[in-house]
Length: 368
Image (cartoon, rainbow, N blue to C red):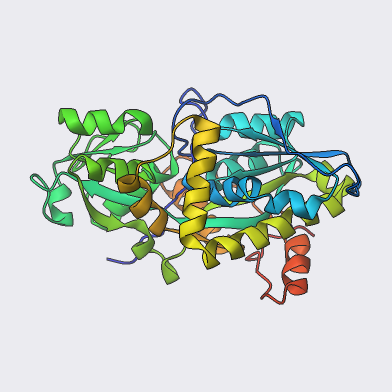
C-alpha cells in the first residue's frame, strides 16, 4: 500500500453547504466567537500604519502559536503601539466569514477552510502567508475490539463531519487498503460515522463507535477513556509533516498595511522559536490561554500526549495542502480547485531571512 497523504484540518463549513464546498475543519466546541480582547500597550509605544490589528484563532492546541504569542506578549512586542484585538473561533466557517467581513484581518486556521475561502472568492480575498503547526491527528480504537489495522473492517469509526479533512483522510486510507466505503452514507467495508468532536468521547463510552480518526485533543481524551492509539497520521506523510494550521490574511489588509503583517509574522516566527526552545513552559502557557479563552484548561493526561504530537513551524508545507485538495477531489467532495495564488510568502521569507533562517517554498502556488 502506498503512503496515504490525507486531508487534515479544522471544521470549515456547515453540513448544509453544497457538496463541492464540503471541506471542513475540526474545531472543538461551539461555533461562537467572542467580542474581541485588546492587548495593552505602553502609552509611548510607536504605532505602525494602523491603530490596531484584528486577529482570530481557535482555542485549540493546534493554534498554540497564537495562544502563546498573545499570552506571552510576543506578538504585541513586535507591533509596538499597534494594538492586537483578538477573537477566538471554534469553527472554520465563522472565521472565514469574519475575514470576509473585515471583522478580522489575520487568522490562524486550517488548510480546508483556507482552500474553501480562497476558491469561493475566486482568489480575491485571502492569502496564506505562513505555516504554524503540523500533525496532531490520530486513529484511536477500542483495544478490546480492534487489535490491528486489518481489524477495522466491519467496525464503526468516527470522523468529525462529512467532508471534513479527517473524514477525507480516513476515506483515502480505506481506499488505500482496497476496501470500499460510500463517501456520502459512510456505509461499506468500514462504517464511517460522522460525529462532532465534542460528543465523540460520549459516543465511544456508549459503544456506538469502535474508534475515531480525530485531531487533538479529542484523540487524547478518548485515550483517557480506554482507547488505544493505533495510527498517528504523521506516519503517513513524507518527513511526518502535514499542515494542520496556517496563517491567512485579507488581501486588502496585506496591501494597505504590509508593515503590520510583517510584524505579526515576525512575532509568529519568534513565538514558534520560543515554543520549540521551551516546550514545557510553552505547554503551560498554551493551557493557561485555553483556560482564559474557553473557561477550561486541559488535564495533564490529555494535554501531555496531545502536545507531543504537534510540531510548531513556520513552513506552510504548501505541497501537502495541494495534496489534501487532490484527495478531496478524488473523494468527490470538492470540485477541482485552482489554487494558484493562494500563497504570498514574500513577507514571511523577508522575516526568516532577517532572522537567519531558511526561506520556505510555496510549491508553485504563489501569487504573481
